[in-house]
Length: 266
Ligand SMILES: C[S@@+](CC[C@H](N)C(=O)[O-])C[C@H]1O[C@@H](n2cnc3c(N)ncnc32)[C@H](O)[C@@H]1O
Image 1 (cartoon, protein in one colour):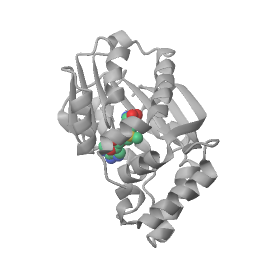
Image 2: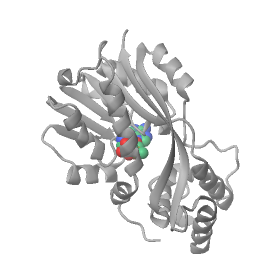
Image 3: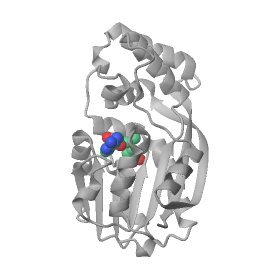
């Protein structure tokens, strides 16, 4: 499998996250959050910037949006495809945006924080950047989907990595998020749990995207391309056997998503 630009993969395979994101927006609009009062926001884990740019429609009075991600290649795509004079894309970790010395009315983070182990560092950065009265719009997964657990198990076996090696996924369920938000002075105004079946389109492309975009994480230091061609074919065939959508070369799998709108109260 040839290595393609990760931003391109992402744009082709992440459409269900956009559907869930629309639910997150709808949920936010049902709270006391007043979109016309949001003029400065930060998007944490923005990837290719597709949703970052859409935030301009959700918050039409935006004067400044700062979008951060740790992936330089994703930011390259974001700057190329989703630029706007009001948006600044920055390469930065989820624990670093307070170093900008700016305050924001709202922080937005969609499908990123389950990659982040050090939630305390994220909240420290958040609380230095979003004052009391500000909002957090958070979309995240609450469990590794079964298909990704199976991929993870295959790769662990293929690379000879013991089960005791820590994975890269750091999920909280709804109770876990409620606890951590309360601890850092945030009150949940609205929350929803969604149980979805995701249809991925081209299975081979999805696998390339998922595993190569996440390879350093999911393979614990190994690259997807370290697999032999036979292993890659076997992985694809195994996953298709279990998760094929009807008679197509596509996957369908379950995912549990959490949507939370919280306000900083102290
Ligand atoms: C699944 S994507 C979500 C992108 C986008 N928010 C969306 O919903 O379409 C997760 C993004 O989080 C970024 N990310 C993960 N851990 C991060 C960290 N510690 N610091 C900054 N970005 C991180 C990844 O690079 C990736 O671009």
